[in-house]
Length: 245
Image (cartoon, rainbow, N blue to C red; front, side):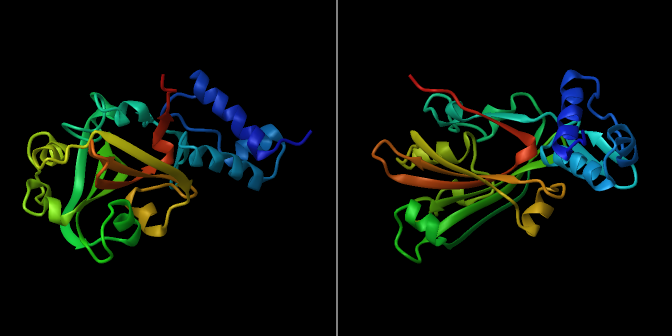
């Protein structure tokens, strides 16, 4: 029986998960897969592409396809969205990363008219200004997430949120000082293919999807004070959810 690309990928994935193919190991190349499974070269190529798309493997030009050494980040949504364990105080990514080395690069802070969807989420009038914080998260030397946050300019313009360094506790601590402490967070999530610019910014392998998350932060009174648009390398994250009591 002829093997499909999915079946070949399933076999290789099992060898990766069992440890037979360790992180950094070179996967069988297309000629080897053609011989082993009796398939066309295109089928072998698609099997390897499936593993690259899933984030389990990476292609190195001129060298072949290798098991990805980067360990996925486990993003526990409930922990981030709960008041006690959410993204207030410190980095918005600290709940995900633990002790893993992290850097924030390419930070830009500026004021601009709110995009239509952001204006609606923040209950702003059309054309109202927001303070934008645009940055890239790098973990273990790899860019894994681009994040752009929007705050009502009339609320934060005179605060440290409008500066590159918002100070101890980050932007959520500054919002609390302004009487707009976030206590509830709502997220909308979808998966899609990235644009060319997004592919280049996150250094994505060809065919790798992204996970786009819109998070809205609200005060005790239900007033929205931040919209954060996060774009995640789908191969770099495991999304974990728990039912709530």
